[in-house]
Length: 134
Figure 1 (cartoon, rainbow, N blue to C red):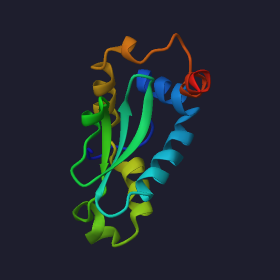
Figure 2 (cartoon, helix red, strand yellow):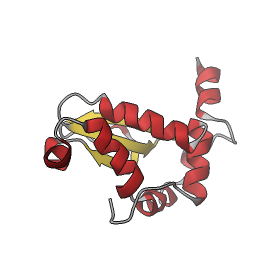
Figure 3 (cartoon, rainbow, N blue to C red):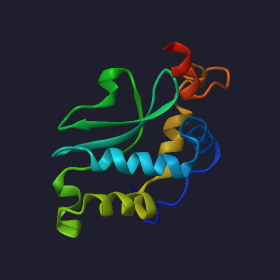
């Protein structure tokens, strides 16, 4: 997070999100759904894996690193992160996180640190790669 954050990703990160989710708007919708679906305390993550970018949610102290995924950004869903301002209105907090707090520059730097060929499938989208494998 950063003061004055939020908005839309740019550059390679925006292109990768559009490739793997169809659009930034669809990513936002899926990220909000995942975050709202975390039971109790946990996290919603945008990660890079062997196929591309994906959204994962974890509970308690779990991390996507344990599953070979590289975190690009995370939304803290423990009560200490939002309860004083939002009480039980987690979806509203996640919207604020995406609109005003998320640090897209940090996420872009994390993406740049991932070996691109590790998850680039010659332009295939995540949906195409899943369809081809199953």
